[in-house]
Image (cartoon, rainbow, N blue to C red; front, side, top):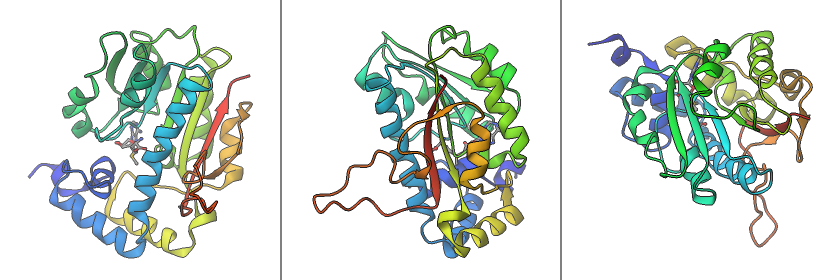
Amino acid sequence: MRDGQRIAHNARVWNYWLGGKDHYAVDAEVGEQVAGFHPGIRDVARADRAFLGRAVTYLVREAGVTQFLDIGTGLPTVDNTHEVAQRIDPGARVVYVDNDPIVLTHARALLAGTPEGATSYLDADAHDPAAILAGAARTLDLTRPVAVMLLGILNFVSDTAEARRIVRHLVEALPSGSHLALTHPTLELGGTANAEAMAFWNANAKPPITARSATDLTDILDGLELLEPGIVSCAHWHATPDPTGTLPEEVPQYGLMARKP
Ligand SMILES: C[S@@+](CC[C@H](N)C(=O)[O-])C[C@H]1O[C@@H](n2cnc3c(N)ncnc32)[C@H](O)[C@@H]1O
């Protein structure tokens, strides 16, 4: 058995929580155990993907951004970034980046975009933003605004100063009008179940995860303009309330959108 089949890995457990089929038995096992500590974890995964749909729609429709650098893509599922963007603007261009070998083997599904637009996939590590930018420049025009998507990935960069360095390096290479869409687990909304689930994850799976506060995330934004409604549960970010005016259930995962002035 190869190492990847013995140790649960985030991209595949995330796929398990989302109801996908691209995972090993060990991923399902750890996914179930984490869900035992934190029964809302599947809601977090679903709310995060729903945030992706609303964020990409906002970026194309409201902000006029049609180029995307989606780092920490995860396994293909319904409504990947290029599908949401190209439904609105078939000319949208998307670069996906992940460092999980399994995501690489499924990347073909991410490359079936519109003929007018473009999609590409980079097997690269978020800790190497220079390599990511060099690879992205083959598909994106980096002199025009780009939306950097960091959904559920900076939580795998344990050091906040390193997370800030990665964001700063990426954003400095992009022009004014570029955006950052971010989701990140937090203990400020989750309570103890979330903390126990993370401790279990760190003892049994890879890569280790860390939660952050809204203050930590503000620090990571470093000069970017935080857009309304600020740092909120990703389930509430630009969510449409039901007819009674009630928002979807809060999940312990922050979501935000920021803009380079
Ligand atoms: C929680 S999943 C999120 C997937 C997707 N962005 C979403 O929000 O549904 C995190 C993804 O980040 C990837 N990842 C973790 N650390 C990474 C790193 N250092 N470089 C690149 N990708 C990484 C994992 O392989 C996984 O696919």
